[in-house]
Length: 65
Image 1 (cartoon, rainbow, N blue to C red):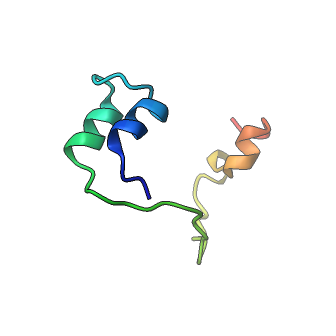
Image 2: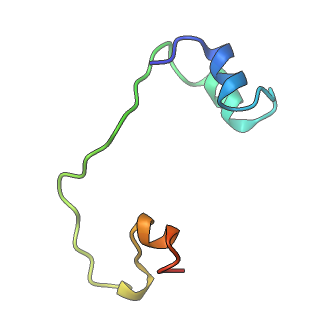
């Protein structure tokens, strides 16, 4: 959990007060929030546009695109 918005804005987002993420951080984000690893419970099966679908790791390695 981050509790120091000024430190996060400077160290994570570069500190530019005009940056959209920094504006969002100070105008919308509540006092505390959490993050971490997400685990997929059920992957939906889609049968349309199969040739356009790509897992992120396959895209990274250039197997899609």
